[in-house]
Length: 230
Image (cartoon, rainbow, N blue to C red; front, top):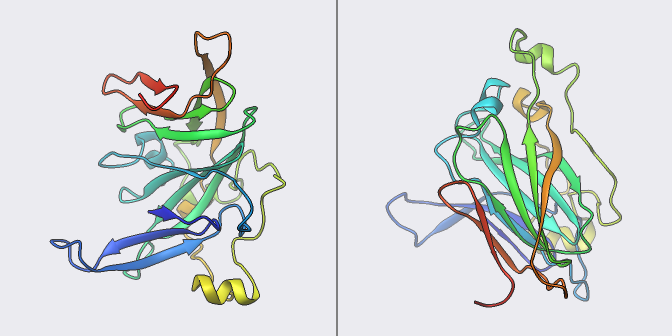
Protein backbone atom coordinates (compact mmCIF):
# COMPACT_ATOMS: atom_id res chain seq x y z
CA UNK A 1 0.00 0.00 0.00
CA UNK A 2 1.15 3.53 -0.72
CA UNK A 3 -0.23 7.06 -0.65
CA UNK A 4 0.96 9.89 -2.87
CA UNK A 5 1.37 13.57 -2.00
CA UNK A 6 -1.99 14.42 -3.57
CA UNK A 7 -3.71 11.87 -1.32
CA UNK A 8 -4.23 8.91 -3.66
CA UNK A 9 -4.20 5.67 -1.65
CA UNK A 10 -3.35 2.60 -3.76
CA UNK A 11 -3.33 -1.11 -3.05
CA UNK A 12 -0.82 -3.08 -5.13
CA UNK A 13 -0.13 -6.79 -5.41
CA UNK A 14 2.61 -8.64 -7.33
CA UNK A 15 1.67 -10.36 -10.57
CA UNK A 16 3.74 -13.36 -9.51
CA UNK A 17 3.84 -14.36 -5.81
CA UNK A 18 7.46 -15.49 -6.16
CA UNK A 19 8.61 -12.24 -7.78
CA UNK A 20 8.37 -8.57 -6.83
CA UNK A 21 9.32 -7.27 -10.28
CA UNK A 22 5.85 -6.56 -11.70
CA UNK A 23 2.85 -5.23 -9.80
CA UNK A 24 -0.77 -4.46 -10.51
CA UNK A 25 -3.11 -2.01 -8.83
CA UNK A 26 -6.19 -3.66 -7.34
CA UNK A 27 -7.86 -0.53 -5.93
CA UNK A 28 -7.27 3.17 -5.27
CA UNK A 29 -9.14 6.08 -3.76
CA UNK A 30 -8.70 9.50 -2.13
CA UNK A 31 -9.55 8.92 1.56
CA UNK A 32 -9.34 12.64 2.41
CA UNK A 33 -10.11 14.11 -0.97
CA UNK A 34 -7.59 15.15 -3.58
CA UNK A 35 -4.96 17.47 -2.10
CA UNK A 36 -3.30 20.43 -3.77
CA UNK A 37 0.45 20.65 -4.24
CA UNK A 38 0.71 23.38 -1.62
CA UNK A 39 -1.04 21.40 1.12
CA UNK A 40 0.84 19.53 3.86
CA UNK A 41 -1.61 16.98 5.31
CA UNK A 42 1.26 14.72 6.48
CA UNK A 43 -0.31 11.38 5.62
CA UNK A 44 0.29 8.33 7.76
CA UNK A 45 -0.29 4.64 6.99
CA UNK A 46 -0.29 1.54 9.16
CA UNK A 47 -1.30 -1.96 8.14
CA UNK A 48 -2.51 -4.51 10.67
CA UNK A 49 0.14 -7.25 10.59
CA UNK A 50 -1.44 -10.55 11.57
CA UNK A 51 -2.60 -13.79 9.97
CA UNK A 52 -6.22 -12.69 10.31
CA UNK A 53 -8.26 -9.75 11.65
CA UNK A 54 -9.21 -9.40 15.30
CA UNK A 55 -11.28 -12.45 16.24
CA UNK A 56 -14.18 -10.30 17.46
CA UNK A 57 -14.33 -8.60 14.05
CA UNK A 58 -14.38 -12.04 12.43
CA UNK A 59 -17.22 -13.03 14.75
CA UNK A 60 -19.08 -9.93 13.57
CA UNK A 61 -18.79 -11.15 9.98
CA UNK A 62 -15.46 -9.87 8.67
CA UNK A 63 -13.73 -12.23 6.24
CA UNK A 64 -10.60 -14.02 7.39
CA UNK A 65 -8.63 -12.67 4.42
CA UNK A 66 -9.64 -9.03 5.01
CA UNK A 67 -6.84 -6.47 5.34
CA UNK A 68 -7.03 -3.70 7.94
CA UNK A 69 -5.50 -0.27 7.41
CA UNK A 70 -5.32 2.99 9.37
CA UNK A 71 -4.79 6.21 7.39
CA UNK A 72 -4.22 9.65 8.91
CA UNK A 73 -4.12 13.22 7.64
CA UNK A 74 -3.65 16.27 9.88
CA UNK A 75 -5.70 15.33 12.99
CA UNK A 76 -8.06 12.70 11.55
CA UNK A 77 -7.68 8.91 11.37
CA UNK A 78 -9.75 6.69 9.10
CA UNK A 79 -10.05 2.93 9.43
CA UNK A 80 -10.37 0.90 6.24
CA UNK A 81 -10.98 -2.78 5.62
CA UNK A 82 -9.76 -4.11 2.28
CA UNK A 83 -12.23 -6.82 1.26
CA UNK A 84 -11.93 -9.29 -1.58
CA UNK A 85 -15.48 -9.94 -2.86
CA UNK A 86 -14.31 -11.91 -5.90
CA UNK A 87 -11.25 -12.77 -7.98
CA UNK A 88 -10.90 -9.18 -9.24
CA UNK A 89 -8.95 -8.24 -6.12
CA UNK A 90 -9.27 -6.29 -2.90
CA UNK A 91 -11.39 -3.16 -2.50
CA UNK A 92 -11.13 -0.49 0.20
CA UNK A 93 -14.14 0.16 2.45
CA UNK A 94 -14.15 2.97 5.00
CA UNK A 95 -15.41 1.71 8.34
CA UNK A 96 -14.64 4.44 10.84
CA UNK A 97 -13.45 8.01 11.24
CA UNK A 98 -11.61 9.16 14.35
CA UNK A 99 -11.38 12.91 14.98
CA UNK A 100 -8.52 13.29 17.47
CA UNK A 101 -7.69 16.22 19.72
CA UNK A 102 -4.17 16.37 18.33
CA UNK A 103 -3.18 19.39 16.21
CA UNK A 104 -1.20 17.08 13.91
CA UNK A 105 -0.54 13.34 13.64
CA UNK A 106 3.02 12.41 12.66
CA UNK A 107 2.86 8.61 12.63
CA UNK A 108 0.52 5.64 13.11
CA UNK A 109 1.01 2.09 14.37
CA UNK A 110 -1.61 -0.67 14.39
CA UNK A 111 -0.90 -3.16 17.16
CA UNK A 112 0.01 -6.60 15.74
CA UNK A 113 -1.78 -9.79 16.66
CA UNK A 114 -5.39 -10.92 16.57
CA UNK A 115 -6.02 -12.52 19.98
CA UNK A 116 -7.52 -9.39 21.56
CA UNK A 117 -11.29 -8.82 21.28
CA UNK A 118 -10.49 -5.35 19.92
CA UNK A 119 -7.88 -3.54 17.82
CA UNK A 120 -5.41 -0.93 19.05
CA UNK A 121 -4.02 1.96 17.00
CA UNK A 122 -1.34 4.31 18.35
CA UNK A 123 -0.86 7.83 17.02
CA UNK A 124 2.32 9.88 17.45
CA UNK A 125 1.16 13.47 17.80
CA UNK A 126 2.74 16.88 17.39
CA UNK A 127 1.69 18.04 20.86
CA UNK A 128 4.04 15.57 22.59
CA UNK A 129 1.47 12.82 23.18
CA UNK A 130 1.03 9.25 22.01
CA UNK A 131 -2.69 8.54 21.84
CA UNK A 132 -3.97 4.95 21.99
CA UNK A 133 -7.33 4.20 20.37
CA UNK A 134 -9.44 1.09 20.83
CA UNK A 135 -11.51 -0.10 17.87
CA UNK A 136 -14.34 -2.54 18.47
CA UNK A 137 -17.00 -4.26 16.36
CA UNK A 138 -20.04 -4.60 18.64
CA UNK A 139 -22.48 -7.26 17.47
CA UNK A 140 -25.07 -9.70 18.66
CA UNK A 141 -23.64 -13.17 18.36
CA UNK A 142 -27.12 -14.63 18.01
CA UNK A 143 -27.89 -12.68 14.85
CA UNK A 144 -26.85 -13.39 11.30
CA UNK A 145 -25.07 -10.83 9.15
CA UNK A 146 -28.18 -10.03 7.13
CA UNK A 147 -29.83 -8.87 10.34
CA UNK A 148 -26.81 -6.72 11.18
CA UNK A 149 -27.21 -4.79 7.94
CA UNK A 150 -30.31 -3.05 9.33
CA UNK A 151 -28.35 -1.26 12.02
CA UNK A 152 -24.92 -1.17 10.39
CA UNK A 153 -23.00 1.73 8.97
CA UNK A 154 -19.95 3.79 9.70
CA UNK A 155 -19.77 4.46 13.44
CA UNK A 156 -18.75 7.85 14.76
CA UNK A 157 -18.89 9.28 11.26
CA UNK A 158 -17.84 12.85 11.91
CA UNK A 159 -17.45 15.41 9.16
CA UNK A 160 -13.98 16.86 8.69
CA UNK A 161 -13.07 19.93 6.72
CA UNK A 162 -10.65 17.78 4.75
CA UNK A 163 -13.20 15.07 3.93
CA UNK A 164 -14.43 14.96 0.36
CA UNK A 165 -15.77 12.43 -2.07
CA UNK A 166 -13.33 9.63 -2.76
CA UNK A 167 -13.64 9.88 -6.50
CA UNK A 168 -11.85 12.85 -8.11
CA UNK A 169 -13.37 14.70 -11.01
CA UNK A 170 -12.30 16.03 -14.35
CA UNK A 171 -8.61 16.11 -15.19
CA UNK A 172 -7.68 14.81 -11.75
CA UNK A 173 -9.53 11.56 -12.39
CA UNK A 174 -7.72 11.05 -15.65
CA UNK A 175 -4.29 11.76 -14.18
CA UNK A 176 -4.91 9.49 -11.20
CA UNK A 177 -6.26 6.71 -13.36
CA UNK A 178 -9.41 6.45 -11.28
CA UNK A 179 -12.74 5.87 -12.97
CA UNK A 180 -15.41 8.43 -12.06
CA UNK A 181 -18.11 5.83 -12.55
CA UNK A 182 -16.46 3.02 -10.59
CA UNK A 183 -18.57 1.43 -7.87
CA UNK A 184 -17.61 -0.65 -4.89
CA UNK A 185 -19.11 -3.96 -3.98
CA UNK A 186 -21.83 -3.89 -1.35
CA UNK A 187 -20.57 -6.88 0.58
CA UNK A 188 -22.31 -7.56 3.92
CA UNK A 189 -19.00 -7.28 5.77
CA UNK A 190 -18.56 -3.72 4.47
CA UNK A 191 -21.50 -2.72 6.69
CA UNK A 192 -20.16 -4.09 9.98
CA UNK A 193 -20.52 -1.58 12.79
CA UNK A 194 -17.27 -0.14 14.15
CA UNK A 195 -16.81 2.03 17.23
CA UNK A 196 -13.81 3.72 18.83
CA UNK A 197 -12.68 5.32 22.06
CA UNK A 198 -9.43 6.88 23.25
CA UNK A 199 -7.95 4.58 25.87
CA UNK A 200 -5.12 6.77 27.04
CA UNK A 201 -2.81 9.61 26.15
CA UNK A 202 0.86 9.08 26.95
CA UNK A 203 2.70 12.36 27.40
CA UNK A 204 6.46 12.58 27.08
CA UNK A 205 8.46 13.58 30.15
CA UNK A 206 9.43 16.90 28.67
CA UNK A 207 8.31 20.37 29.72
CA UNK A 208 8.68 21.58 26.14
CA UNK A 209 6.24 18.94 24.82
CA UNK A 210 8.41 18.05 21.88
CA UNK A 211 6.59 16.43 18.94
CA UNK A 212 6.54 12.63 18.80
CA UNK A 213 7.69 11.61 15.33
CA UNK A 214 7.56 7.81 15.38
CA UNK A 215 5.56 5.17 17.21
CA UNK A 216 5.77 1.37 17.03
CA UNK A 217 4.49 -1.61 19.02
CA UNK A 218 6.69 -4.10 20.82
CA UNK A 219 5.95 -7.82 20.82
CA UNK A 220 4.71 -7.66 24.41
CA UNK A 221 1.97 -5.22 23.40
CA UNK A 222 3.61 -2.02 24.66
CA UNK A 223 4.11 1.02 22.42
CA UNK A 224 7.45 2.79 22.11
CA UNK A 225 8.10 6.11 20.43
CA UNK A 226 10.79 8.53 19.36
CA UNK A 227 11.04 12.29 19.85
CA UNK A 228 13.71 12.82 17.20
CA UNK A 229 15.73 10.87 14.68
CA UNK A 230 17.29 8.61 17.35
